[in-house]
Length: 459
Image (cartoon, rainbow, N blue to C red; front, side, top):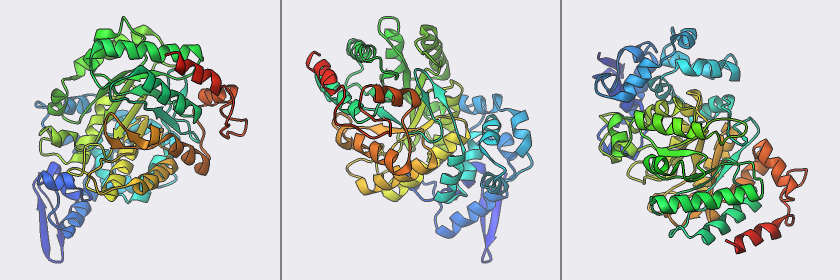
């Protein structure tokens, strides 16, 4: 089906829905690299005006990647909730945008609607939104998950404590963990990217994390961000809380990651069987990021933001505890500068929330991108206003293993203080019992610091 729009007596034609979505996307370097971006600003506006008039039902009739070719397309179509969709089935994309910004679209209404939205619908409407629209809509969403604590409640901001080490040295990792805990980080997860995917190293780190958690009765969860096959290999000989996997928005992308839905289902069932959660059973942790499909030459002609949102369909079938976009990690070939990174992060967070996912963001950039920590401060503040579920806490904001820049324990303190946000309730109570926070939520310089440091010395 062809789409077209006329501006200043010039008619712009778009061959199909896939092309229209790409041309309507706010400019980013990845789409230009792939040859998918609009050639001019006027063409982009024409595409956005055309997209605004597309009925939402069209997305159920015209697949941007053929049904028979892609298991994610099949997942999206086969699991679509027609009953939930019926309330907005008469909308165009533009009408959906206007409705999302209205008072009628409140938190409970959006929660009921999410199974009726497809990733392509959500990607489309986000392309018509300014940054403030993305923030306004996301702020109304609330997606709450539980394992050993409660993540995602309004008025709360959780932090993944990310104590990576370039040689997986347990003492170095433990020092970073203690540093993070003393600054109130770690309620989302204590999650380590291992320098090696060696099962032996993964088992060692899992035991170390579990020893620390149980010794101090910390109401949080741990995760070694190894490949899902490694997690399955060690799951019955190590204390595995969460199973992690990076995912993409096309079957071809996930094949490049060495996964398919059946493997994720096996891992999900295995993690559930352990019954390690105390207040909930959300056991999966997924990471995504715009540009992953293109970097694997697996984007199937789809723009990188729509590919990203399609990956959320993979995630939501497993009711994960955590999902985050590692927004600036892949590099300036895909998101060139701070402006593009900020826009992409707000898109990802809003789209994930609309689809019912517990979205966090790794607010980050690589050292060769045209971005700096001021850009990350801006994005951190915007995401805090938007109701982001969690961010990263990295010692000094500088990951010495992955070699990129993120957010620090101090950054998390800043966001919580200026925006009046709290840690997960159970974790906040633990911080107060330890003397790390007082009853006003203020960080203390004393408390059980000597005990934690004593643990570190004994590792």
